[in-house]
Image 1: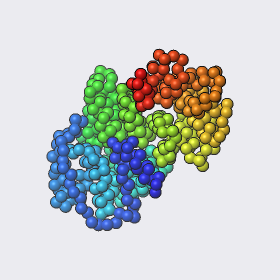
Image 2: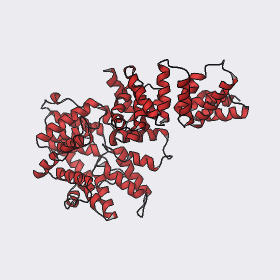
Image 3: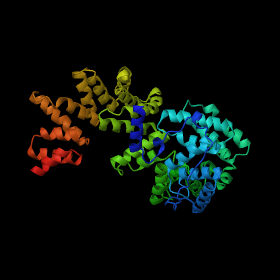
Image 4: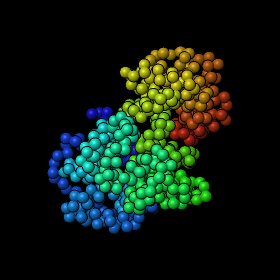
Length: 485
């Protein structure tokens, strides 16, 4: 389908570090062939994060056993490729192997595939992953039960079902599955940190990341908590990396370099990632625009941080001129719950997305008016754009754009300038108003506004200053004009 192809292309460029969006899992019905042929990847030295050195030797042993025909060893190879333990991380290579292994009915491979595909950008892939987790959990695969619990808790691939989160974990824990016990302990102490978790430390020591997380939540010793969190991070749980990084950023044990290393692993190297939004918020002026966008997109996709989703939507719509319908469909599903709960900023972003779909214009206007009436400047600017596209021109549209621009929303400034600039017959007062709004948009780092302001500058000095800024913001013609002088 064209839309699916567009989504794949966008996802590969915007979320190249995640790997999730580049590969669709087979449907349950397609996984029936018994043939398995999995090549072993070349092991690599661990990176600078806190991965135990013995993992390299264990990975080499699993690779050799996989080549010798051990299906379980092949699954272990894929698992290590997911988390980058003892080998350079490659989610795509892991998913290719897991698909083959799951088709051959290797149950743990199916469970791992469900765990990864629950975070796919493709809604249909997420739904398939949840069904796969349900199937393998019913067959006694504890990894699948953990994935199913996560899906029910977060509403991945289906509705939120809080009443069904812990039941599959308890069943597998009673059957002796330690990873399920660790997930169950973590779920319980997450809801009530006053609860005792006597087994958490032992589960952590035996290599269960969620046992480490639970241990860190219940201990009162700062150093012990950090040890447990870093252990969870090394075992592939991004939450351990994120929480440890947060504690290393400030306080008596502050270690900025260590915080950076942990944040990098938790946000950029694991699926699901964690801590991207906290990392971005801790250093808002440090990252360039592209990096900020990547961190916000990962926080939106993997952490479901509504404010991150709003930032992603606003940035995307400002830059592309409301021309990203495939991604708009995905983002809207993540924003709808917050809008339904009455958050104006979520309704503003959702309405702006809906305004890109002809059949959703009425709903878009309703959401945008709701948000604009509650002082969401982006919603006011977007409402003006939608009404203008419906030929509802005149005072209301320009008033919406002026209001948004004065409130610091660059989309309001640029939309006003774009609509007004071609009119060269306006009187002096309206030309002065255009310059004022264009200059304000330029101060908000909108290059198009800088160009418009420079063309109407009251003095040569102001014109040069505005052209310089337009050039800095990527307006090439302004750079050429500046060099010609």
